[in-house]
Length: 321
Length: 262
Ligand SMILES: Cc1cc2nc3c(=O)[nH]c(=O)nc-3n(C[C@H](O)[C@H](O)[C@H](O)COP(=O)(O)OP(=O)(O)OC[C@H]3O[C@@H](n4cnc5c(N)ncnc54)[C@H](O)[C@@H]3O)c2cc1C
Image (tube, rainbow over all chains, first blue to last red; front, side):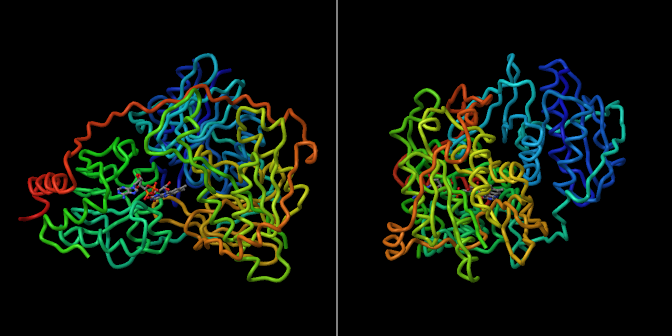
């Protein structure tokens, strides 16, 4: 057998985009191996999820009606049982926060090697996974010399599958041992309301760890003021308590799509880029010409922000602090 | 109560670097405590400071150089440390997720902690899988990407930071492994006094045999076969000149785009 089994992801009643990306990644690998693509969705309104997931390229969809929301103890047991039935050679899981909460446990339980955060999949005899290292400064290929593998797939790397499919939809009865369910999700909370909504702004001046000290934030704030722009930031600035959570751009922060996004001293880590790559024009100010932000920037100043930002403030008639 | 914190020394690449074979040339790497682990250490030390009779133990898998990193944990308030290393580990090309999990699991089994904290991910290889793997090997409960933690006798009440500004509230039975997200606390700097005290805290080096493991633990079907600089698809326009000239060009662009006046 050379089949691929891929997991969909949903939250609070909706499938997440990554589910449709899993179809594209899974189809690509299934084709390379000459096998079928099976998709599984666990919990929530599985029947309506299955209808949505029935897109071109999917051969079979397995619905597991267990619980409303994600619970890793249920997922691990359900996947272990479904895996035994489908007998795939590759199990693909989203490299999402929830994916990272069950994929390693599943791999250990199945005693199958795990490779996380794949940005490319290829089969050349052995499975070759492309992933990144050192904060996306380099890429690596990792070869898996085993008959089976668990791979987590980086969100937003594969396109979302479209087109109507003709998959066979089957419900799978998992036998969940409740005594092994030792975690309980008790609720959800939205964070980061507050005074400004950075997702409304036309121009964002966004500050990252390159700013070094809390008191230097003033400098970038002065630039934002001079431009009539809104100030946002990467995560470390918020982690340090230098700006409130509602200013954070990225995977765990806000998704923004301004006309102009000026990234000041931001490296462009994948979780940051997830929140701003839809900006119309991206400008990077960074001393490192190889910083990953340069791959998505339209314009760049490769220079010290402490030299450039005061000049910019002056250009726009402001006053550097 | 006993808390075990797994920490890792990570390599960071300089702005300009060269690749030598399967890794960045050693000359361009700098080593430091993994950012996420710093928050895990702080969380453990804060729990110890708030409660009576809490012991915090740190463990790392690494060569002698990594003692610098683990002394850092001791200087920040960890009580004692374990470094796992021997010739077999030194001879292994790299450790895959499962090998690391097996080694750390053996330490968990020997120490029998109530709580194990790790970082969400290591900043160099970014696997993000060690904590949950360890939990599964030792049969502990777990939670990944935790940005708030409250403990009572047999439960950890945590918040897990999901995507898009949504947090999940979850109760997890103890003993448990939690992977700690940055921002959960404010990691302290090691004080001079802390650094001095760290020198006299116990740092125990253990080999695979001490942990009841043999060389088979490092055998891995997962192997790095290439490293390369990703082909840049970027068509970035770089402004040239001194800072003033660069700023002038960017200003012109922003005026052209009509996003600023004047
Ligand atoms: C589950 C998870 C969720 C996450 N969610 C988010 C998120 O929502 N948003 C987010 O941003 N991150 C998020 N992260 C963190 C992310 O991985 C990075 O750690 C973070 O984005 C790095 O921020 P930075 O670019 O400001 O800092 P760094 O990566 O440290 O980059 C600093 C940059 O500044 C440059 N620099 C330094 N000095 C100067 C100078 N004088 N002049 C000009 N440039 C200079 C450097 O060259 C470097 O490129 C998340 C991580 C995880 C694991």
